[in-house]
Length: 207
Image (cartoon, rainbow, N blue to C red; front, side, top):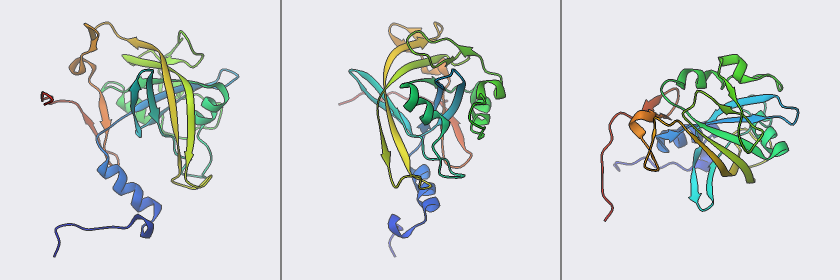
């Protein structure tokens, strides 16, 4: 008997593939994305399919899937498509519970900032707000977005690429051009309802 189970994703359900994906690709940083509609209504939502892309120009990506309840486009993506702007805020141990509450689906036009009591802070170069309580925020302009999968299919998603045009870093974390991870206390997403803080750090020099 082999020590490995081999599974063909084409023979699995969307939900089964999702469970295997989030149980394998981890820990995942969390993009706490703030946007504003063209009329100025704010929105705030977490996304754990998220990473940096490159530093020249400084670029990141996150992946909003279609809404699981009805296959509709999420408010975050709608706002980004219509305005071309967003802010990614870092989730810390202090923010994680309120971040989780913003995952609740609200009617379009209702603000998660109001729901969880976070402070809308004005950005410098984009109209989308940042979260004042987050110690690191990155103002972004949309570079491009790509839909992956069948339109409106549950489990399909989008890759949103944004160029960072402004950093906001709390001065207590910033030293000699670097951010102190231990002071930042970021939180990562695991599978299901599990999260993990950064508690043990080790150094490993590249060869």
